[in-house]
Amino acid sequence: MSLANKVRERFAAEFAADPAFVVRAPGRVNLIGEHTDYNDGFVFPLAIDRATFIALRPRNDNRVLAISLDMDDRREFALGDLRSPTEVDWIDYLIGVAWVLQERGYPLSGWEGVVSGDVPIGSGLSSSAALELATARAFHCVSGFGWDTQAMALACQKAENEWLGVNCGIMDQMISAAGLQDRALLIDCRSLQTDSAPLPAGSAVVILDTGTRRGLVDSAYNERRQQCEAAARHFGLPALRDIDSATFAERAHELDGLSRKRARHVVTENERTLRARDAMNAGDALALGALMIESHVSLRDEFEVSSPALDAIVNCANAEPDCYGARMTGAGFGGCAVALVRTESANDFVERVSKRYLEATGNQPSLYVTRASAGAATVYP
Ligand code: GLA
Image (cartoon, rainbow, N blue to C red; front, side, top):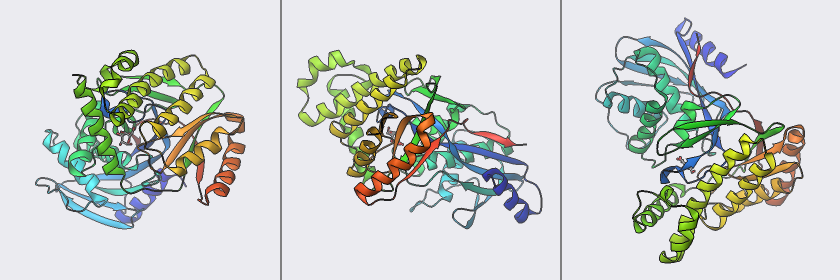
């Protein structure tokens, strides 16, 4: 049964009525442009075919009642005076979004509904952004305010930063809000302008979950952000987005060794991401794959956010003749890699790489072919 039907059925069982709305917001995988979003740079993700769904109907008492099928839990809160959590629970994603929307002046109404998603939690595919955008969409349905993709992405990012205490950039919320079916989205993380491109004909995107999850991601992430900001300050620039690789090469010696490595990754990754757009527009899978391979090397050696498991799965993938290129994706230290593969060999690729990686590391991976899907939307009625 589809997830949309599952939440609808459960809604009918709980509330003895059909839901008034079903909303959906997807997770994401990033093809290229990693650790560039908080440097005002470029990213090139696609919204995946895994998503969070909410079946809901309005309530007229300013309360939200949410039943999570995945958490096997039911929670309620009143709109109005919301208090930030001391320990983050799944309902805080909903409360955080309500808090920002209220703060930004959206008139909110309450609702009750059933939530479920199939974006694996903690794997780096942005299950949080999916839950946040689905929540924003639920409020849009019952409260009647207009849906502005950028404004909703920014609101959800603020919920993540200030309510949930995760210092992320704008990529995950923006792609969950603005994704397009069968297309990847080039996002300029400074202007939030987007441009889209189809995947090269005959190529498919495979997600490779290493099965490893790392703690300490947050502190390493924040440390990288600070290093990047310090490097930009050194050059007297608002962000590393503002220096090209030629100028950087001339002035790189001014930075200490570690800052130089961090900054070099960001500067070159931004350029790779723009070249990836050219490769996609030219339908050149080989060129796109080569950029993905370069990106991984830079993330591994310069930015130092890969892990032995990620390197192992990327190596297994790149050893396959029908793989154009593979790299780690998302924040790093564990979670997923992404590969661009010849479509006709994608199923063989999944089988062979799973087996090889398991033999090499002893970790059970999970690989699947994904398709680019649309961003947050109301799917019923
Ligand atoms: C996480 C963050 C994003 C982005 C990536 C790295 O997914 O949530 O904002 O910074 O890491 O590219």
